[in-house]
Length: 139
Image (cartoon, rainbow, N blue to C red; front, side, top):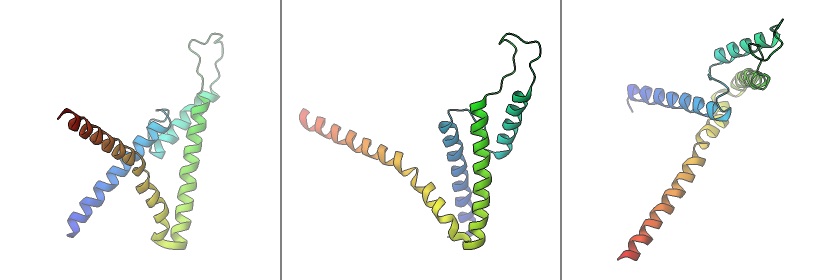
């Protein structure tokens, strides 16, 4: 396999992985997180902390009040913590075991799309069988 082709293939797989990560993150948190990049998560944490610490002096009604979204802040803090923990675990695993430490996560990421793909395949086979039965009955 030529080296240039291999580089293009790896680049496409990285792009697909990033798109999958974005899609998963948006679906998992129902759009509460607007980015998968840790810098955006840090920005959102700062915004929510600013809202949390803001003093609503003189505002007795809900109109115009600045209120933090505490559940969203909790999700963002857990996400940032998971990022940091994953980085530390990955660095320690790589230092101890080398590239082989990436295999469990790689296998998980390869296997996850297999579940909906398997469901789609089963539905497609059932659809084909149904069409074959209907086609056989008409003749």
